[in-house]
Image (cartoon, rainbow, N blue to C red; front, top):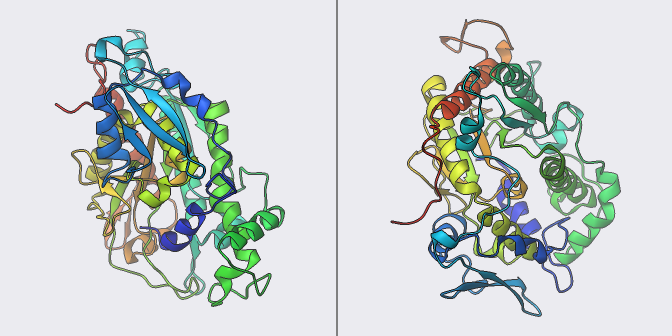
Length: 431
């Protein structure tokens, strides 16, 4: 689990704006955009996806009221307004749900019989997590021990993507890049977000005593305008701009979000190395009651649910996770709290509400292998990138980034090979 998430993430989600209750930098939802989903889902399937995947533990209570033929969904809380979703009477009367992406089964069925490349026709977006480069320290995705090689997540994920791309391309996929350099996708910078940051702090009742902070250990860092501006830059604006790029221009069939995990490391200049090393994959889901009280989050959850991403996300994630786990040999991570929910049949798969997998309208395989500040991974980072295998951390291994990349490619190839033309993926409905 990433080391910094809980407190500030909740702060951003609990922001309000006049009658609209919105997350940081979120646009006001256009609920008319969901009209295209009228009568595209049965009541049984809606209830199943809402209560078992997206809003478990009655998280949507009082926000979504389910009647026999429709659901009443709050669009604003004060004053209360409602959007009505009409259910299809039965599966025979279902209207097709609009989507720009194609399922793996559809892609397999569309491939020419003579085509030997298993990913022919697939449009796969690579999203190397974070930014890296000069932004890595600001993102808190950087640590270094003495004069050794720094561990920088954004640069590592980009290198993994660079190794994945030609392999998937050779298998027939069209590769789409969400980020292809150590530069932000968003045109905003912390300096341009100061007024938004000031407004966020004001909503929390915080009047900054200081504009800037003195370093990561400054006890007043979290209440400074500089820190709030930086967070809005790399955690909100950057991801929202990636989502716009992906949904409006790239429009992939599948997005692979590449990350490395981490445990608390303390001072990035004298970090704590841990013995733990593990792996998990995230699908969108497990929204909390507090998160759903934000109008934009409620809207985005419905967009994801009605867009039917879950089945494809889960099936792809389970297949990729099983293949990767067999190749990299890491045990599954287990979340200790209630911000994630194990879903599906694999111990490696967890549902969690992240900004990226919520805003991306097509299926996402969100990968979290390796613990960056584990002793083993740190030693592998120090060994650098190399072809073949070398003795590293007590065993003959590929380089860390090549092992990661090769495992992803094997997982996607396995997922494509698992499709059968005569067996299209069906919606998940309780028996």
